Amino acid sequence: MPEQYPARSSRVAWRVYDGEAVILLAEDSTLNTLNAVATVVWEAADGQTPVSAIVDRVCAEFDVDPADAERDVIAFVDRLCRRGLLTVSASPHEAPQEA
Image (cartoon, rainbow, N blue to C red):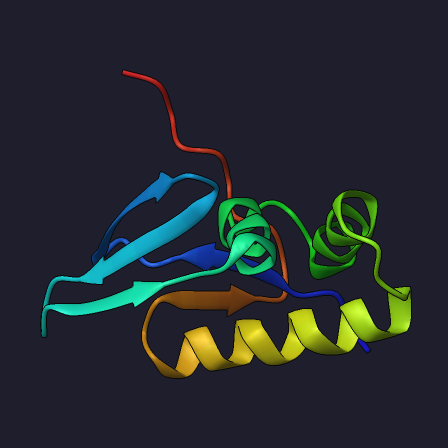
C-alpha cells in the first residue's frame, strides 16, 4: 500500500485536555472527542508524518500489535476524512513558513 500523509483540516479548532483531543468543526458546530490513542493519531496528522510513522508512534506509546495498530489507524484516518476533519495526500505537505 502506498504511503499516506494525513493532515488536520484548517476548518477545525481543537485542544487536548487530560490527554484527549476535543475537535470542533466550525461549519456545523460538530464536537468530536477522541480517546488517548486517537489523540496520538490526531496530533501526528501534520501532513508531513506518514501513516507508517503514526502506527510506530501508537505502538511505542500503547501495548498494541503492529498489524492491529496499522489496521485501526488506517480505519480511523478514513473515518475522520469522511467527517471532514482530516485530508490525506500521497506526498508530504511542506511545513508552513514562520512569519
